[in-house]
Amino acid sequence: MLDSDHLPLHHFFIVLEHVMRHGLKPKKGLLGPKKELWDILQMVEKYSPEAADITASVRDLPTVKTAMGRARAWLRLALMQKRLADYLRILLEHREDTLEEYFEPHALMLNEEAVIITGLLVGLNVVDCNLCVKEEDLDSQQGVIDFSLYLRGSNSSNDIAGNENNSNNEPKQRHINTMLDQKNYIEELNRHLNATVANLQAKVESLTTTNALMKEDLAIAKNTMIQLVEENNQLKHALGQDITKDSRMKITELQADEEEKRSVKSVTSDRSKSDKDSEMSKALEEERKKYLEMQKELDLQISLKAEMEVAMKLLEKDIHDKQDTIISLRRQLDDIKLINLEMYKKLQECEISLKHKTELIAKLEAKTESMGSTIHQLDEKLQEDKLTRKNLEDNARTLGQKATTAEKKAVAAEGDLRIEREWRISLQESMMRDRDKISTLTQEVESLKAIGQKYLLLQEEQHILKTKYSEAQKTLEEVGATLSENKLQLAELLEKESLATTTEETPTWANDKDATACATCNKEFNITRRKHHCRMCGLIFCAACSDKTVALTGNTKPVRVCGACYTEAVRHTE
Image (cartoon, rainbow, N blue to C red; front, side, top):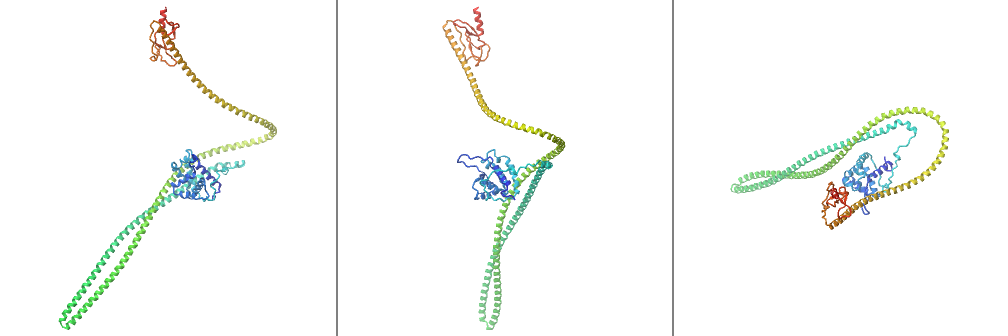
């Protein structure tokens, strides 16, 4: 039996709480709603009606006041209901509707590990828990786990040497046993589920057959009711006709008798008294006989009428009873329909749970296969470890021999140890001095690190200034180029003015916009290759093709000329 004070159970709830709260979004703004775990757990009742009882009981708890306390109580009640894994699986299936607005994208509940956790929580359905939630202080629980319970204690050297053989085999055997237990448990669960499904199918089949039989009985009862009603109506009609016929026959017979008596009286009055007496006595006897017969027939008709009335009452009772049975049968039919609907819903739930269980079984079978491969690898490692163990035993024997020699040396080394202790004391003193020096040096290193950081910042500033300087140089070069062009244009304008004053004819200068390449070498002009006019022919050349100067008439200084004009000018001078 596990109480609520059991430490591993307490630690389990703490870990589960940390898993569920991992990656919860913080509160947005001062007036915004706070994201709580209780708000997420309340949404489970939308998808499974079985969780409504838990949430209602948690809301009615008087001792729990905070949202986190309600979430803790909900988790404990879900564990007692054996549906904790199913409720978490429902939340993961509807994570787009429920979890994404409460959790960050990196949260554990939005990753694949959450599916593995729900699969592991299925094993808790075996445990029967009975926890008292009202007496626990769930609002202010400590989330600290003492891991000393789950760590192996340090054994002595003798215990380790004695248990070397069993230490390697025990965890493997335990692991194999746990895997086999889990497999057997899942197989039993599968058998139980198959049995329940078979029983439910048999019940459904029996209910369908009983439903069909009840429908047939209803149809037969309706037919018999209709027949009985028709027979009743026919009997009533027949009884009414017979009574009217008998009464009419009796009246006609009495009238005939009276007429005969009158006729007899009239006839006998004429005859003699003797004849009258004889005839009257005969007629009286005949009338008496007829009267007796009529009385007998009347008695028979009265008895028949009484029997018919009794039969009618019995028929009416049968009709009422059959109507009651029809009403009860209809109610039973409605109840059977409701039972069929419930059974159909349960069948659907069982099929869903079966699919989930089959998926879990497939996953566990894959795990068992992987575990089988790991067991095979561990067996191979065992054989290798046995070989290494033999080698180690041989080494231990040799080491034992060496130990005996070492003990002899140890006696001699004790004297050396005393000397070394003295040296150690002196070294400790020197160590203390060195530590002081190290502390001072570390301070200097920290100061140097700060200086280094400043140096790096200065280097970055220097790099920025260099880039600015190179950009400024480029702009200055461009400005210089434009200034040189402007100077040349001024010189050309001055030359044009001077030439205009002279009487000699000057050549027409080519337009700068029309010239795109040199007239001699045909190289295109750019920022580095500038345009230059020949002062004799007026065409545009590059600096290389117009690098020669000649003193022309009207100019005090020598002027830039192209190669062809230079040769002509030299010939004229000769």
